[in-house]
Image 1 (tube, rainbow, N blue to C red):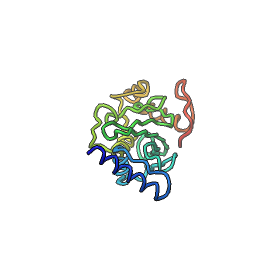
Image 2 (image 1 turned 90 degrees about the horizontal axis):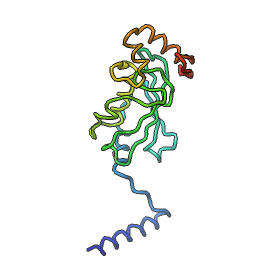
Image 3 (image 1 turned 180 degrees about the vertical axis):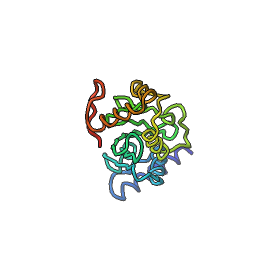
Image 4 (image 1 turned 45 degrees about the vertical axis):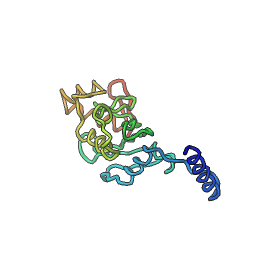
Length: 183
C-alpha cells in the first residue's frame, strides 16, 4: 500500500514537470483560509488592503485605515499583518507602522485589541480584525491601554487628549515624543 502512494506521488510530480517546469508549491491550510478571507473582504471605504510583496505572498500584507469620524478623523494609519501558516488557529500578528498617540497602540506599534490576543477564535477572520482596528480609532479605550499616558489623558481630560492627537497627527511633539505627520 505504501508503495502505491509513492508511485502516485511520482506520477503527479512527472505530470507537473511535463506541464511547464517547476512543480507548484502546495498551499498550507492557513494560506487557503486567508485566500478565502481576502476574497470575501467587505471593508469600509476608509480602509484599503495592499500586498507590498505581490499577490503571491498573501501571508504578509498591509492595511491602511483613514477614520472618517472621532479624534483621529483625517489621519492615515498603516498596519502590517503577518499571518501564520496555522491561521486561523493563531491570530495574525498586527503592527501599526504609523507612529500614533493612542491609548491602545504603543510607540513601537504594538496594538492592544482583545481579538488579537485572548479573545481570538478560529471563526474570526481578517475582516473582523480590520473592523476592530477601525473601531480603535473611532472609540479609543482608556481601560485597556498600552500607552498609559495617553489613556490617563483621555480618561481625565478628553479636550487635552484631542489637542494632543491633533498635534501628533500634524507632525509635532507630545511630551518628549515626536510624531511624524499622518494627515
